[in-house]
Structures are given as structure tokens and as C-alpha cells.
Image (cartoon, rainbow, N blue to C red; front, side):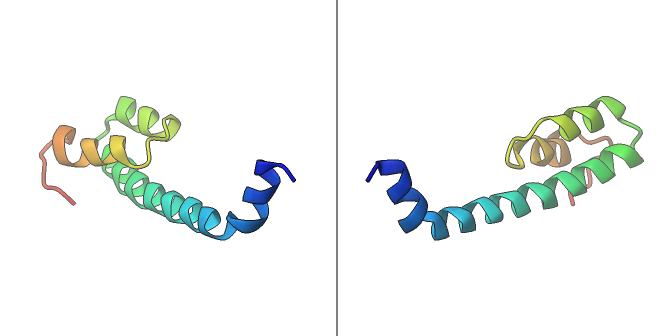
Length: 73
């Protein structure tokens, strides 16, 4: 039996959970940041965050560092 098939059958539960947690993390931060960028009429930030998947790093930077009139979340 190959390593990949063993990983798929024995370790897929934790891997699937990790992927779902990371996807939810990204969705929350990206949603907040996209909403703020749209309200601030910052179309270049909106496009960048819409295209680039960064596990929430780019949206978090936008919210706390680069947002106009920084007010946090």
C-alpha cells in the first residue's frame, strides 16, 4: 500500500477538519475586509483581496494597517 492511500484512509479526518477550519477563517476575515474596502471605495484593495488567497493575512493587514480612517473591526 502506498503512502498516499494510507494517508487518505487513516488521516483524512483531521486533514478535512483542518481544511474546513482554515476555509472558515479565510471566509470571515475576507468578508469583513471586502466589506470595508467596498465601503471605503478602495477598488484596488477589493480586487487584490478577492483574487489572492492568503489564509486571512492580507485581509487582516488591510483591516488593521491600511484601511482609511482605521477603526479596527
